[in-house]
Length: 162
Image 1: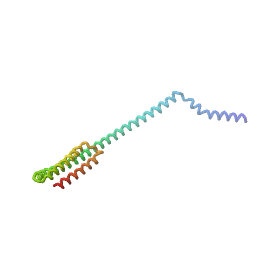
Image 2: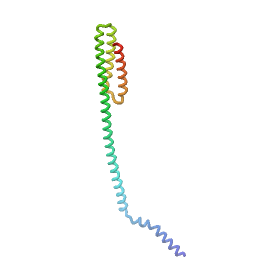
Image 3: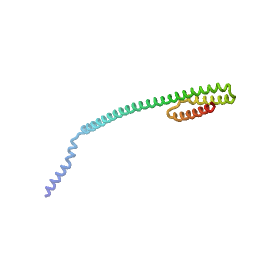
Image 4: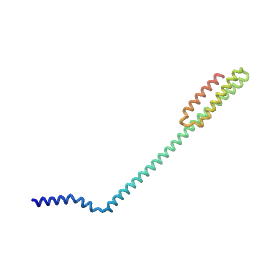
């Protein structure tokens, strides 16, 4: 029996060593070739991913540029429409002030003094109005609100005088 145990032992050792024998058949050059092949595949995948990122980023930037241009154009239109409206209102106010000038020549001196104050208030409004060209989209709402308030005050003062 001792012989059969020894034979089983040799068979077991042989079977256990078989994978090592197969692994030992691979040369260093073969292993390096596999490493090189894996690296080449990884490099190709990286290049593909970079290409997709570049394409996606370029497309996203083009969309962003188009949106920015549209928003800037809308803001410029909004600002110009408002400036046009204010200029029309200012022209009408100037006509009212001219009518008051005619009345002031034949009226009491207090109307002339009031008219001087109104013109000063108008000039201050015009200075703020002219600064609209320097207003950014961020400060637009505050500037417009301030200008609207000044306009309301000026219009009320002229109406009160007239």
